[in-house]
Image (cartoon, rainbow, N blue to C red):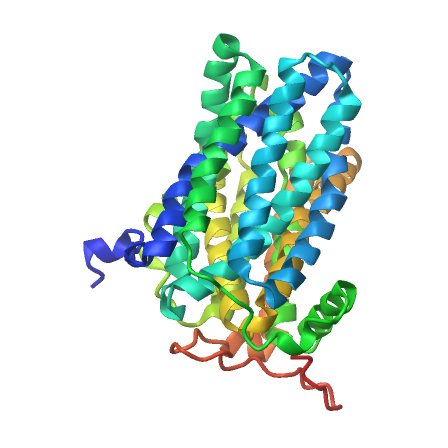
Length: 432
């Protein structure tokens, strides 16, 4: 029988001083980031009067974020990760200050806003990549699932509370003050990173003279030659592109429910993730990480398919809560595999690739769901996308035995069992 306290989120990583400070500061910084995330599109629409300009802001940030994630991951493998993280964190704070300055000066320029958004998204891409490469240097391997669950709870909770806080404060203090509040909130993370010990590259000295593009290419080759890693990326990409129906929420709210219900639909997925995170002790002790990745993706797809067939708002919310919980579990297991199944000198680059997948999957999903929804209808598109996600997860689990048998490391090792070159009939040389 599972004890009650084992059902709750494992707080073991918080006993590590460096991780505890980063996690606590992340609560403040994540809320601040949500303030900016709400204010930017509102200000762009206010200045331009066009929703197309708002959509352009999302597109403008995509390419810089992806490129900076790869670049930051390469730097994290050959530089002191504390310094790289400190630089990206401070840079995010500076761009928030610049956003405050343009709002305070009432520049009313969409071009200036788009440039600042692009710069900040690039810094965020590099920051998130390096941050995930830092975590395995702070906590023991067996605590990584719990650490990832704790960090996910913070981000998801901020995604719910931040917009509500912004909506309450904006009419009172104005957009400039919210930008300034974000800049001040970033200082908490700057302080936490400053308190970290030095985190120099391990075994990366021979690559210090290599150009960054070559280091990124080494990371891509490393992934393609490791069946476990490649399959984990494929499972996650399938879940995010085939099974993420948020692009259809407005149409669902208008045709199936009520227009005012759209906020409930968006919040339900995050709320399900928060609930799963609070009770993550149920699954963070799982050792069969590879199978857990596929099962979580299958659970996500099944819940999305159920949501597509829901005829009432309570049923839809129940399915989305389940979907959010499965998506959080998928993220926890995916991050843990990528953090433990590679040498430390390659972690930054693989986290960079992971950021690109995490950003690109939903963008492609929006395009696929929008196109299919117009052609086949919302119900068939959402339910079909969930079913395809389940089939993809099952296929990858059945045909990739190393994913099926991959287990969490016992601790201390650079590589976990199962992280070997793919059985392709020809020898493959390690790039590390």
